[in-house]
Image 1 (cartoon, rainbow, N blue to C red):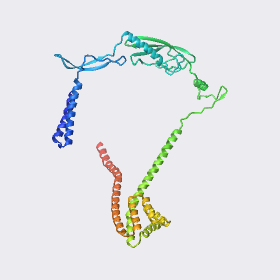
Image 2 (cartoon, rainbow, N blue to C red; image 1 turned 45 degrees about the vertical axis):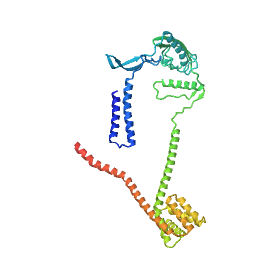
Image 3 (cartoon, rainbow, N blue to C red; image 1 turned 135 degrees about the vertical axis):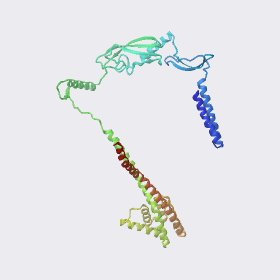
Image 4 (cartoon, helix red, strand yellow; image 1 turned 180 degrees about the horizontal axis):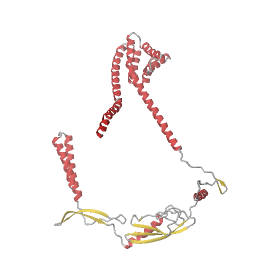
Length: 426
């Protein structure tokens, strides 16, 4: 009860503080009201659950087998007790003698069905018996004893295989609320049916067992012939086939993931390089158009200049210029300028190149009027974009330097701290 009051009081204080210092808007008012209500309800519920009267003078017992129950009460007796804690143990329902006998008889029938386990009948027992400790949903307890413990263990499993049928008496002591019934019956344990292969293998095992019993011998001689049959012994080793298959699958998956990662990395490098070259391409086109060339001649001049430098190995491959060269070859093959420039924008897969392709297509369709101004504006935007890229590249480089700098800091600290620590120890 005290904990309930404390929880309710704490919630009320939180609500009151919110009401005093919060902004008095609708949301805050509703939040405060909910918190206050929760606080009072918590306190009231705590009092209710700890002091509710049972409303009757009887307590329901558990059914047989369910066990006793413990109940805690707060007792009020006028002038003597007030909220006095008392713990009572209520035992399970007590049975009459006839009811106990009925439970025991039913337990006998139930045991007759359960004890077989995997055996077909008690006359042909070759597998362990199932000996339940409780029957009739726990109302009856059972314990067992055997007339021959060389055949059965106490848990009903077979101690050893038999060569011929053996009769074993089992006594089951069934107890229901101190009423005891002894139930005795017999089981017939028979030899397990074995195939010719199992019998031959057992014969070989017996021969080797006899060899093991010989004294002062450094080796065990394995039989090479038995019953006119030649015997070849092969040592069984753990197969590594599964491991090889698993490792092969992991390796194949790793190669696929690596290939995908390489493709992503190459695509990222391609995009980065093409964005870096964009301002230069626009600048060259604008310069050549200003010198009096049309867009086709300017495009050809830029593409062929790049091709000549690549043949002389003066520069590395530049993807944007390679796409320009492909567009030039496409035009010379008769694909048409409009189609070639449109394909250029599609192949580049970047928004800025699609925009450039669109500007060039408009220039070819409508003439060169205003193209110079548009390219100059695009050149300025490309230059601003290139500055942003350079800034991002600098930030990435700085981030990559953090790890080596951290390692260097640790080394420096170690150089300073370790000698100082050794001096203090001395």
